[in-house]
Length: 485
Image 1 (cartoon, rainbow, N blue to C red):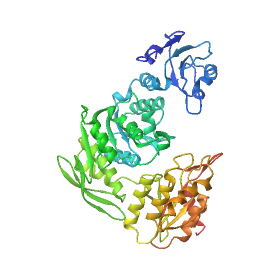
Image 2 (image 1 turned 180 degrees about the horizontal axis):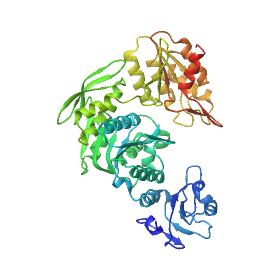
Image 3 (image 1 turned 60 degrees about the vertical axis):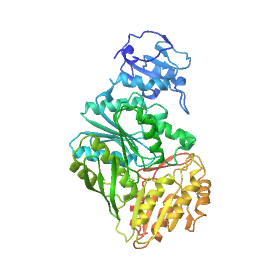
């Protein structure tokens, strides 16, 4: 592709060198530069790409997009006001606007995004639609799995994925859209067929500073939609977003349990193994079932069913898709062990998500609820005592431990969690080493107890001060069980 085509629509402030050159690739990481590519110099939070332009030239870059003046010879230089803002357009141009042909479904919200993507994928595949996923756990192109390092990839990587999905004849892509991705423009120049809002609770406020900014970042998704916006109006922030976007030409579909909505759940039954409810739509009602217990699970199923309803998928296919889905890794995941107690792994790492999973477990547990949890380092300190209060209020016993402490001292994080749990009547112990904490919880577990390991979920690593180490809770449980804990 010619450089002029790659830069179509880009507001160029200045240039040096020829625009009439062939471009083989577009990258923003100098380590990925190959001969014939364009290197986009991004000013990041920690690294400035302008400092690596000579390295990019040495690896064969033929053009560079800059926002700061640089010293460079032998390549074409294009200056723009903000390289990060133009990168999504450049990526879309280079990969020939793949989302104009791919049916892209985006889900944003604090909780439920991952599970909802899997539910939608299950329904679409039940309807024989070739479907891919982009999200926190992984990227799946059909049945082919690719590791995922962030909830929403960078804009260039996204456009490359979309092109690959089209080339492999995918009809749909269902993706999680993070507030960071929306705020940083990673999904600019993506055309979403359907956009979904699940909920907004305390998380990422270290970045957004307050709920208004957090909500405004999420709301950006619903101005990128072509077919339908689907909003949970039981959530107070969902109501505000629905009110703000109701005059858009794109149809607004609401869902909920407590408030009158277009798509509703009635006659809800929750037990230790499943949820059952009646799906009520403007055209029909049908009884549905899903294997993940909890009120939060009803909301996830509603969002998925609403999406399928908008797409005109038969009600019985929706029923089969919701009923036959396998467990989503790290989301209310029951570990297969031959013990008289139950162990559940869940990604809950915010006050609301922890309350959701514990409230669900509390409903059906005949014995005690033992919760092993911690809080991540270098993240919102304000939520740590709140997490402690939630765990203490809804558990019979807590083991406070490390999550991903990152650069902070684990002991300091634990003490902040303790401030919240002290306000409850829950007995607890602090064990800094997470493996030792799990061992202790399994040691004290008795018949009919449930041990919840909260925070890590699908993650198979732990981020420490100076390193990232392998840490798979499933493997650890198996090892401890073999040692007859």
